[in-house]
Image (spheres, rainbow, N blue to C red):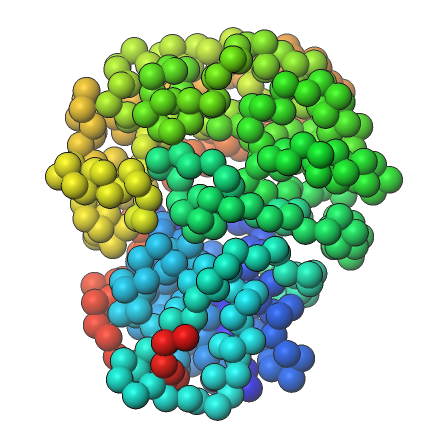
Length: 469
């Protein structure tokens, strides 16, 4: 049996190459390949880098779907299903909107795949048929620990990804931010992998630069210390994501830096305590001064990638300038200034839907929607003004004067020649890429599939049938 795994892209502007900053190696297909029995041939195709071989023989197709790639993923699914090839969809998006995804596949995987992938393979082998629905939903009822397998990175051979190895040390998040789809997917739970498994994967990957994809690598401080102590002998440069709470523990910060941490992404989200409370993230500033916390992290030699979100009802037009000024003043390594996105399945989406404030519904399938568009009606400005102000904030942060000003941080941004070279390259690269992403159409610009994007509502019949499980 042969299975083809596909990683869909977001979209392309006509005549342009795919956005370089999105060319990261994808973990999900590599984990599925590692979970697949050795007698099953696995072919991996990355839509962002190469044409999809629709006519190549295969027994089934598995597609990892995120909300921004949903329109493209359904187009790809349609092409295979017309040939009678069964399609299985999985990932964040099918889990959050299962009925929508079922209209474009013979089966979907909801939640984490480790607990159900063996059943998917077995049903593909036997071709088990359903008495009624003709479709199957594989559900991982309980959140589990990440698979005790190393992703099959041989799938990436010959593909030109950014020079960074992605590794999962843990997954999930216990917080309950209103706009976050991650918390909904994992049901507000978090789990970690054994440290020895992580070290073995780092060694087998052979990369000296690692990004831990954990949503909060310091969520459990005791476990984080255990991991960081073990990372020291590996002598890697690593990056990850974490909460501002790490600044409360100077010893933890020192251990992070000693273990090879060069930078962390921190979701500051807003400078306003009122806005943070509306987000469900008031703990971000509880008993904490941002400037003091930032100074502690930078003094430890750890660079900060700061993210901010605009568009809550408490945001006014002055919030943008205040935030950009703050980001430059605090000498953040890089920063993102994003508008609020109502992802399906989140409390934010349900609230805006109930209030009748969605401009596109569903926005991720709307042919008129473009990357950078605001999908809802803000209270204090128009949707167009919110989108434009976010774009201008990014431009202001990545201006040459800002880059030079932030380069004066010799503790974390430009601590040595290698660090300085990396800092200037990343800022110039990030500024270029954020302009390339703006206005990107979802699901179009690939090969000759544009007409298929209009047909994602059709439900042709594939060959794989099954009962709900």
